[in-house]
Image (cartoon, rainbow, N blue to C red):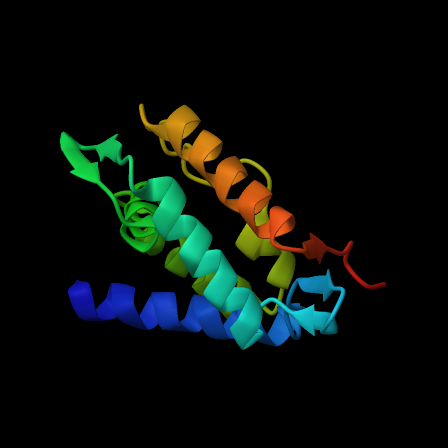
Length: 148
């Protein structure tokens, strides 16, 4: 059973990757550096410094105080994406879409599992993330709208 769900999940990822094309990185403008992608080393350095400063006060997640932005975001992603049955469901729908030759079946209305419940810490996490991005902006970085 485990092996088949892994295979189905891999098929889903391949199907989505072939349809989605390249995901465009966010772009930022800085007075001295111009327009750069979101993974530019100077921007990453500022974002990490701001995250360390803002998250130093901590956020309580699952009864533990988390003081690392990276750890807090990882917990949030795990809570929202890795709900029981979600990967198996996505793999099954992707397999049906691939085997039938109808990619729209992977995302047919009414076939998605129920959304994950909203974590109790979500409002605090959102507030901390707004503070991180305000700090990044105060350091001279402006997020640009997506290129068309």
